[in-house]
Image (cartoon, rainbow, N blue to C red):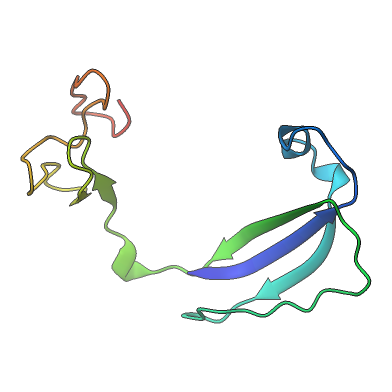
Length: 112
């Protein structure tokens, strides 16, 4: 669950968005939002007039959810959600720790 959302703006036209990716100094913080646990919607009132070419929305902080601590993986064969343990898809019986392309199984690492 999201705790804090930061909204940044930039009034600099660029050819590709990748130019802005690794340059935090070109972004100006427009708004910081704090959410309550379980909040599903948020309304943002930005200062007017606001002129910008780019917007960046950053999910900066999260609430801990103890019920979501079990990691879910995706089956490489049928794309079903599979719990981290027992590592075998209940739908098609595939090992979820295998490479999507070559089907090589890595029993130690989650990303072979």
